[in-house]
Image (cartoon, rainbow, N blue to C red; front, side, top):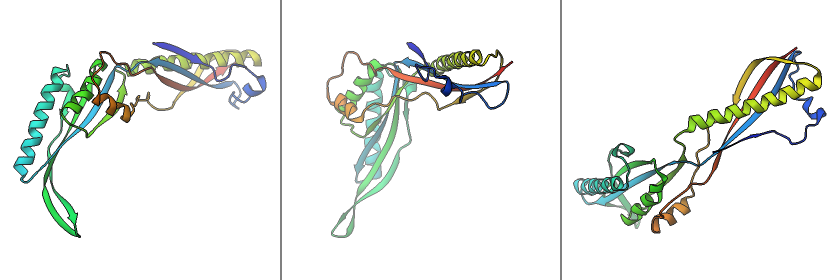
Length: 231
């Protein structure tokens, strides 16, 4: 893990910094940005099983068998049963249009299955398994971090140190001294999810699974507005 604290500018220009302090006397308001670089260690895939048959029972049985086969295969790859979430089956009549006539085709049974992958070594193997079982209706939901909260805390800590350094410089330039923190405001959203490329996922599914896989490094950042009291 690489932690980087970044200043908004490499060159400090007094005229620019004069805009940063609060208009209130005895206060300095600054923004700090912290960054944490980390490699995701989790992934998730949403799978949609579908089958159309002449009767409801046939359609349901086919999807049930698909789900059982898929779940057993996923467990052989090391995916724990509790990380495989099979949804309820939906059955709807299916039609097609021919010469402006609506023709009944059969009943389509569908069932969603969500797979959470805790070991990225299994990620390409899961995609390859879907190709082997001729399952093409799936979405890769992106990569995640098992220690997301810890990463965010590290980024926030770096952001505060950056804000503190800025405030100390401003206090020095203005001939004052920081005595306390009045307010800390967190800005921005949750750490980003690292989304994979769908075309890359399809290519990976069709090719032989690799011995190892890495999602690459992603950046989580934190933005803090800090108000310091001066005297």
